[in-house]
Length: 98
Image 1 (cartoon, rainbow, N blue to C red):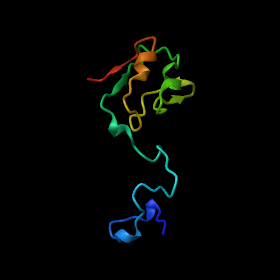
Image 2: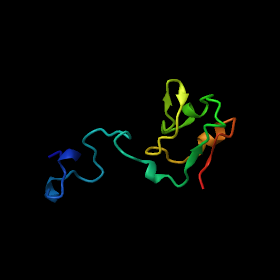
Image 3: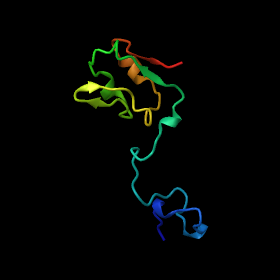
């Protein structure tokens, strides 16, 4: 029996659950808030930002939204704090939050 994640609840029998390490349905990071994994938090300074958008394509988690052609603040629900954006920003508009 293949049980979907939506069908698993606190009263389900262990025999009716999926076997460990087996995936029966697709997933997406859009449904999983992975930002809590972050050990460091980047901070964007809109005053220093020149809207060059260099940081956007380098973000491996697509956590730098662009709205109407302009970069907006981080999507902290999905940012992992890798720091790539800090390295590629030529205007030092991104720093680590203390």
